[in-house]
Each structure stands twice: as structure tokens, then as C-alpha cells.
Length: 153
Length: 278
Image (tube, rainbow over all chains, first blue to last red; front, top):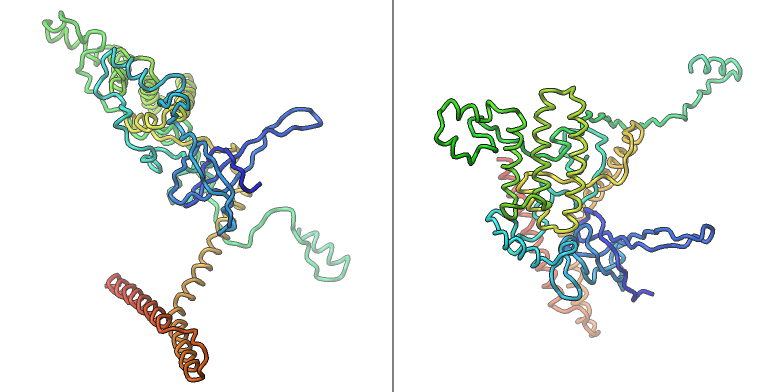
């Protein structure tokens, strides 16, 4: 069983070298004869922190655990969040359209200079901690101590 | 309580105290301060990092911007068509137009997600200004709340669809996005104190561990020197007794090198501390 791969989504976790992965399965309740969601969480070794919250990743169990917490290792980021590539055509997709289709449409109308340019856009994650706080879990502010609490809502 | 204690004293004839064990009371001196309530439509809650740039009011309103007749008209007529003399919503419209123009894909783009968000942001900031002046305006307040929630929802969608565009929009409109907390609950004294106690315990644990590590580090040089002495002794004895030699010169020199590195590190730390003190 240790060689099996697990497919899960990354959930927010502020630990260095590690990401938390949620593997969701459907479990049959024999009493109600209905399926219910069942989540399992795995702490995954990810030294360079490639994963971001929401990515769909493949993980595998570590052969030798070097830490009590980390049990799995990252094998592949299947779908990075918000940057999907179509597995059939290999083109980039946004919701129901290919990116080049959208681009062609805007070109017909005459693309404005200030418009968003996907090719020139920098890699994601540059606003982490300043304007984008999705890499950690937020909480309702319960205490006032004068220190900045970026994840308090 | 004291009455009950005195009753018990008379009943049992001893000094037993009644123990109060129904309310959480910590021995630790942790002070809890309840955070002040910030209304949800305030900019610090809604995620608006900047306000609208004030308009001088001398600009022509949007409807008459391209009018040829107005260009050749009298100064007074021009003033009449400026934002100062037009209804308030004309100023809002011009704000909205300004904001949309910064993110539009093309000139006729009025329905893309960026534009929708820009439109909402302009309205939200305008409403926030209004709420500062008229805090009891319930109708606008409700509208503002709903609009903020809607914008948050749209930002959530955009993030899932196209992360780079989401970041670009955040930067362009100067917004801050925080995902919703996993659980909504009342803030209570007990729960907050439990959380603060947990944090206190964690801090204690880490500080103790760090101290222990520091003390071990301080003993490192001493330990290595003793190790070198022992290795040298073992080597000498093995050679003297004609037994296979298990400790090589390399082993000893390696340990010596480690000692030198450690000593250098310590000297650096000391000099940096001295400069800091000066």
C-alpha cells in the first residue's frame, strides 16, 4: 500500500518545507445507504514550497520518515491553481475558453495598452502577505495585543 | 461563598474550603483584551487599501464630454455642465468610468470580470465616503454590505479561474483579499483565554528548547577538544600495543578543523555583539 499515489488538494499551511494536502473520498454510510465526504489530511514534504493553496497534487508515502510530522512527499503538481492547461490539446484554459481564443477576441476589438497581458505577467505569489492572504488560514480576531495580525479577519 | 464556608465550618468543625470548580480560571497572568468591533463596510474590513482620488469638480460630466457645441460655448455654460453643477451621481459615474478604464481589455469591454470588479470597487468606495458623512443611512449601508460580499465572491472565482489576472486586478485596484475563516463564531472570554494559553505554552516550549540548544552549543568546543585528546590517546596506545589502528590522522585533523570553525564562529558572534553594544 505504501507505493500508492494519492491525489489531493493543497490547503493553507504556514509551515516551511511542508504543505498540507487534503485527500477527499466518499464514504458509504450503510445505515442511510448514502455517500458522504470524508477528508484525510497529509503533511507533505515540499522543500522549495512549490505548492500553493488550491493546487491539485499527487503525493506518495515516504519510504523513510525523517520527521514525526511529515509522512508523504510531493511527486507532481497536476493542476496549479488558476493556471490550467488542457490535457487534450495542451493549451491554456480559463473556465470554458482557451486563452488564445480570448486573446483573439480582444484583438478584434483592439486591445488596450493597459489591459492584462498573460505572457508578461510575473509568476504567481508575489502579493503573498501584502494583498493576497490565501497562503494561510484566516481567523476571527479574538485578541488585541498591538502586534500586527495579518490573518485576522 | 463565605456564608456557605461558614456553614460548612460549623457543620464539620474544620477549616475545609469549598472549591469553586465550575468556571475556568487560569493561574497564568494572561490579559485578554477584547478587540474593538469594526463595522464590516469600513475600508479596513472590506479590503480597500486606498480611497478615491478627489475630483476638482471642474471637469465636464461624462455625457457632455464629447459635445462639440460645449467646446465653443460660453465659460458660464461650460461651468454649468461641470461636475460641480451636476447631480452627485454624475461624479460617481465619472469615478466609475475612470476605474473601469484602468482595467478594460478594449474600449467596448463592459462585461469582463476585471471591469465588473472595477465597477463594484468604484461604487463601494463612493458609498464608503457617503457612509462617513451619513452614518445612519441604512439603505446605502445594506447595499454597500451586499456589494462588498459580492465583490469578495467574484474575487474568489477569479482566483480560481486565473490566478495571475487575479493578482493583477488586486494590484491595479489596490485591494486586499483575505479568504473567509473556516468557522464563524462568537468571540468569548473563555475561548480566547484558552487560545492565548495555548500560545503561551508553545512559546514556553520553544524558548526552553532554544535555551537547551544554546547550552549544548556552548559545550561543543570543550567536547570536541576532549574527543581529540581521547582519539590521540587511543591512536598512541594502539600503535604502542601493535593492534590494528582504527583511528587515523585524518579523523583527528577533521575534528581539529571543526573546532577551528566553531572558534571562528564564536569570535565573529562576540565581535558583532561588541559593535552592537558600542
